[in-house]
Every structure is written in structure tokens, then in C-alpha cells.
Image (cartoon, rainbow, N blue to C red; front, side):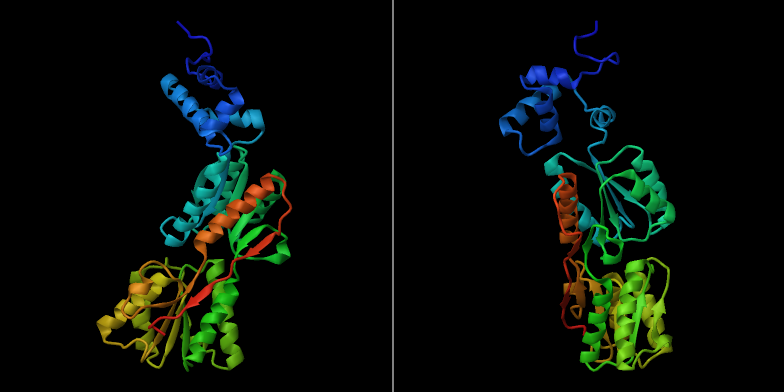
Length: 338
């Protein structure tokens, strides 16, 4: 026997949950989505009703009713990098208060893979999109422009595009590392970079510009590889660098895992840090402050980037006029390694 209020599939509906909880369907929907404006006692009643009926929300029906789903798509280039994990957690903390679900896509630093993810997710009409950087294919750019879906870019700034973005100047961060090493009296300087995504290259450009202005840039000392950044790779590249160029006296690493690997390799080889070589990392990842010696690094606001990007997106959804660029800056944390 089919109960009144059930679909032909036999599943309970939102209307039946609302009737059982003695609230309107709109209130029931908001309560189940975790919207903060619903009174706690009503949320408890609605959730209890939904549990007793075995109700599960239908995202497709919700999307049809509102022309958009209640999801926000977040695309990042890696899920193994602590940088993006902290950013994602901050995003979710902000959006869940508004009852929005976060859908995460990992495109493995491939613009073509990002394009495929965008194409798949835009079919489901998300409420908003958060992207990492500006390295998109022409097709992806066109989809974003014609979709009408609000979009915020993270980790980079680019006033020329007129896009909404939250981050800091990657180029200035690289320049700051170069100025620090020069200030320590170092002149044979290396930028050691892996992965070679646009942000890594921007940091390298800032580093190089300062060295060129000081008249000490040597292209033979620069180490660039498309391999994925890791502690193991950092140790390997550092040992090779000093074997081929024993006069190197300072290294700026594109990420802290490379710098941590170099510091460990220096311990194995008996190379004194910073007496022989100064080391500067990037991102100030967990563990860097506890290396031997403690690692100098540029601290990036990865948690704040996620929080502000999500808040900026909510402002766009609410029609609030906002500044399109949010520069959160960075901090050079000087420790023993430099």
C-alpha cells in the first residue's frame, strides 16, 4: 500500500517531512540544508521527522525548482598537497553555514583535465565555482564566461582580467626570498623548482628579476623539473646541485617539501646549514619549524585564501558590491636555515 505524500517510487517527500514536523516545506528545506537562520528547535524537529521517515533529499529536484543546485564546485590541482587541504577545509567551514554543499575536483595540474571537470559540473548548474589560479584552456574560459555561474579564483592576483580573485603576488614572494638571501651576503643563488605550474614559474620570475638587478643571476645554477614536488626529490636535487656546483651558497625552493628534503640530505652529507648554504622554503608547511636546522620559509595564507574566497562568492550570490581583488599578502618567516 502506498502512503500519502510518497512519490511513485515509494520514497518520502519533503512535504511529508514538513507535515510531520509541523513546519512549512521551505522551513523544512532550510533546516535540512543547515541554513543558520532556522531556529535550533525547528532544525531538531525537522531532522527527527526526516530520520523517522527515512527521507533523503533529491538534489536534482532541488536544482529544477531553483534553476541551480545547492552545490559549489571547487577545483584544485592536488589533494596530496597540505596547501590545498587547509584551503578546502576553510571553504567548507564558510559554505556549510549557508547550506551549500562543496563538490571537490582534482585536475592534477592539467588544464585539459580541469576543462573536463568544468564541463561535467556545469551540467548540474552549481551555485558557484572556486578555481585555483588562471591557467585555463580557451574552451574552459568560454564555458565560464557563458555559464552565468559566479566564479572566484584563488591563490593568484590578476587585475588585467577583471576577475574576482583572492590570493597574493607570487612574483613578489619570489622577489622577497631573493632579497633575503642577498641580504645574508649570498651571491651564488639557485631557484629549485618542481611541478612548474604557473604559480611556481611566477615565483621564479620574481626571484630572477631581483638577482638580475643585483648582477648575480646565473642560469646554470637554476634547477627546474616537471616532476612532482616531494621530500625525496628535494634531497636528490640538492645533492646533485652541490656535486655539480659546489660554490652555491643559497637556495630558494618552490615548496617546503623540497627544502625539507634538502635539509635532511645536508645532514646525511655533513653539509652545514646555513654556514655553507642558506635554505629558504615556501608555504611554511607543518614540520618546517621543527627541522634541523629550523627552516626559513615564506608563509602563505592558505586558510585565509579559502575563507575569503568563499565569502567573496557568497557576496556575489547575494548581489553585494565588492572589490574584485583581495590581496592577503605573505610573510617571510626567518629561522635558522638562512
